Amino acid sequence: MTEILIIKCLNDNYAYIYLNDKKEAFVVDPSEASPVIDTLEKNDLQLKYILNTHHHFDHIGGNYELKEKYNCKIVGSKKDRERIPGIDIEISDGDYWSFKEHTAQIIEIPGHTSGHIAFFFKSLNAVFTGDTLFSLGCGRLFEGTPTMMWNSLKKLRALPDQTKIYCGHEYTLSNGKFINSIYPSEDMRLKIESLVELNEKNLPSIPSTIADEKKMNIFLKADDVSLIKNLGLQGKSPEEVFGYIRELKDNF
Image (cartoon, rainbow, N blue to C red; front, side, top):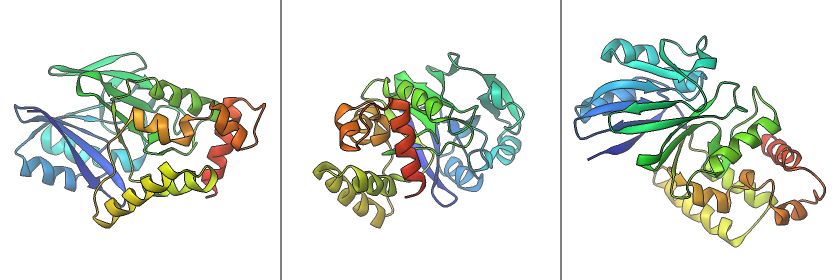
């Protein structure tokens, strides 16, 4: 049996542990070590690799402690070789990285940071998107332009509809409220109700799917004619529409 475990870290971060039937595991974006160690020990797992989507502290904070304790290897973007502590395996856009029978396609998705990558495991129907694509949202532009982020989101949007999205934070409820404030719909109202229930039960809204995001995530719709018309942005390019929406979210 294989499984992806969701680990809550810090305030609203998620790390993810993939485990196989041999009790071997990798972890994605461990912002802190202790909850990851607790989960590994509870499930009697052997940590073999750490996968980092980008260099921000709330995604790599547990790297050194986990590496020292488990003698595991750290996988990250070649572009972030100076910014990811303890990196062992450097990967780039279009590369493939394998863990036993499963292989990840590496997709470069700059915008949030310049070296941001996603790990797409087709055989697991899973993509680890860090802080680029969230459920109902996308990341802030710290080291990129709206054009860069829009192009990155289009790469993720093109993945198979059934792909499950494992992102870096629990932002779904606030993202839904933002969307409903500028592009309201009955579907979003009902989605927000379900998200409030999950939040009250302290349950994750993750994973989403590519199909869900294509339907509901306004940041993936910057080339949608009806949305552009609704926002009064006729004649604007998708990059300009995306940038406008991102700026609204930054000030929401």
